[in-house]
Image (tube, rainbow, N blue to C red):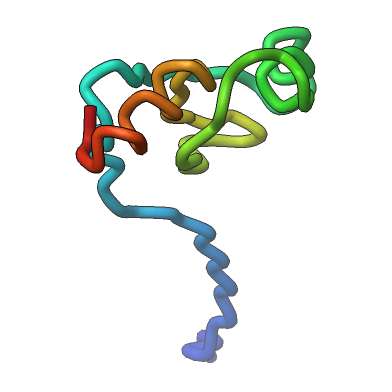
Length: 81
């Protein structure tokens, strides 16, 4: 007889969503979390602020970034710059 029972295991890890621009002077940058770019962007004192991050692959992220100066200016004006 044929074995009509089968056992298939499927694991899916997926992220879905939308990342939207928050400030006029902000920009998006994609980078690997273990890259030199990540080290610069995610280090305090670099002169930039990371507003939001979305995972887009294995250790790959898209980040919305703005300079500290532009963020402070936008917040003083009470808007989204």
